[in-house]
Amino acid sequence: MISNFIVDIKRERTPTHRAIKQLAKRLLRAEIPAPKAVFLPAYHAHQTIQNARQHVLRVLVYQPMFRARCEHVGQGLYMYQGLPYVAGDLRLRIGEQCKISAQTSLVAGHVFDAPTLTLGDHTNVGPGVVISVSKSVTIGSHVRIGSGVNISDNAGHPEDPIERRTQAVSPESVRPVIIEDDVWIGTQAKIMPGVKIGRGAIVATGSVVTRDVPPMSVVAGAPARFVRRVNANDRVEHIPRARAPRDTEARSTTTRAGKTFARAETAR
Image (cartoon, rainbow, N blue to C red):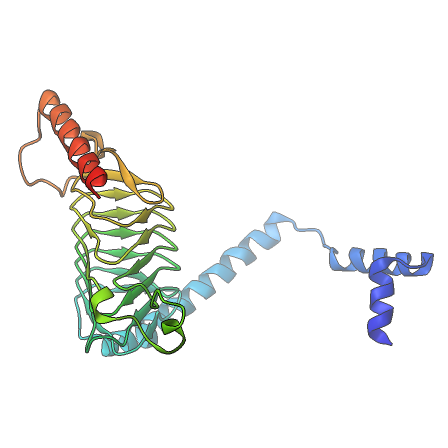
């Protein structure tokens, strides 16, 4: 009876039902005056209390628990928003000064013993990142992984629909992933099995990377394709390995890299 009455109100079956619906809307959207002199200090006090609470939990609860779960963790770990989700017998080796969101999922497959996830120093893992490891995913130092990124060294399930009912992925379909130093992976990008992303490369937002990415290159799209070389102005200070190329050398390097990547795509 009550449910029918609620339906009648939503449908405004009669003027009375319509009036009740309008009254309910006003009550749901009710507000009081919000003078800044009163509520701005209250807002900052609330934020300070929340931040202090999260800091205490992070230092005394979340980070010690996560460190105990890992095989190795360097100094300066910073975890925010809570505790990351870790599933399966996953070996975690994390370098120094890493930053990891609690909304991260780190999942081990069941194909090989002791699948291993390695993070280098000063690497940041954003919210909503999912890393699936059946054998090995290696991520270098100073890597930036945007929110919602998916990295996997396995297909997740067999391709054959009948096999998917009862079987896990085959060992032959597992291919380790390597992400070298100073790589930037944009939001919602997908890194597929067997991919190696070269040092200093940039993967654009939403890209699906199905093949190797050359160092110091930008790729985009689904599947990801070579767009250009990383400009000299884009180059971060801690990528120094050789002298900075002259303009003519940089242009010729860009052309060579683009042609090489294009030839590789054509060959495949």
